[in-house]
Image (cartoon, rainbow, N blue to C red; front, side):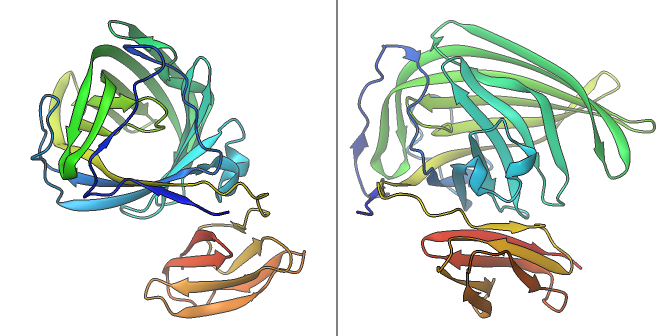
Length: 319
């Protein structure tokens, strides 16, 4: 049976209390992931009442099992991936266990992969009001032919426990407000750049991402800090699959992004098709147990969507 649980804009929803008052525990996440719709604003609401917050852009994020994504092989330590397409496909990879939520790096819209050699613990478990969490990591990776030395320093404070009110009569009881400062400093032989990210995030039990957060991005250079932009985002809707049937073989496509050819594989016997951003079918067929090769050399550069059964995969073609 394939059911869908939706939190709609017009619904008045109050979530049950967390298992231990004023403490975030390790979440119980659905194994097939979630789809979130967030409202994004250039304003920063304050306090616990966000009912007057307005969205200048609605953004859909997928929070999927890491092994269902195009870059799974590079992030073997991750359990889930956050996938978005704000300025091109972006991936962020996370692991979850009883000790915390770990961040393992990601892939930017240009296809550059940054794989962390160790996790940065983004959120520890349990995390109780008044706790202070710190973590840091230093490593080297390659980007655009340069060796980049990255230093990360993160400090989070479990600041307050309360009830959060969001637009559309959406409400969350027993939410942890977490104040975080994260300094990311990159250096190469010729370039040095620092980014300071300050966030106020509201975390609800058993949600893999904050239900709302405000953020300030600042550039750090030569001892000076200058604000680049500020904003906020807040949950509008979430959907999770409750399908208890055995999962089909995950559809994969590689390389992705691609220039000339794409290799696809999926559940044998399952039909597939690829549509462009306008919805026109550009290729179709059926998986037969071997890797399906596609010549994309004459396709227009851009975003495509491969569908098979109830699975959808983004394909990016570059020339």
